[in-house]
View (tube, rainbow over the protein chains, first blue to last red):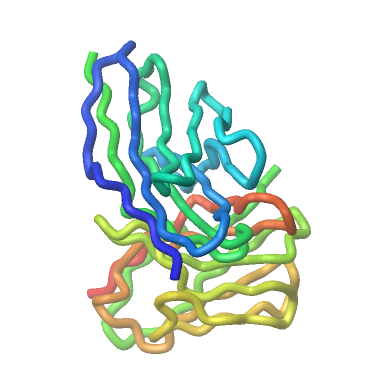
Length: 112
Length: 111
């Protein structure tokens, strides 16, 4: 069975500081991995995805994520956070994007 | 440029009432999904469809039924609503080889 763990429920970061959100997955084969962002009252928006190839993936809004097979991780990073990055972030894993399992989410608060 | 549209956006029901949530997509996607989102639990898959006329159970299907009579629509039904079904419901669709596109959600409260 596939599953995702996001160890951090809530992270507070200063505007302009770097951000890293952790994601650990459990899956028997090479997974399809995704990061989504959800602003309050909105649906989920895809930030980036990993299917195969280069393990460092670039996404929208200046985000990137690195797939590390040995650590079963797919951590999301942003070098300099903007106030508009305050949102909830979800990591997801799937066999082929057919059916996804989502983590519980990490809420990011940005302080001025 | 509608994408995935969910109707209604908000609804309050009494225990035992029935209702249907509608999801419509205008992208000609083959796959459609219904999720529920609860605090601290992320999104959990209720039912999904891989094409018109087909449906399948997800992780938490009990108490829900679905239908996909037309390719562009995926309906989620609650036959007898229970307070445990208070949640935010999201619909998503996708085509082969592409990520899921999500609607803005339906907030459902059951009293």
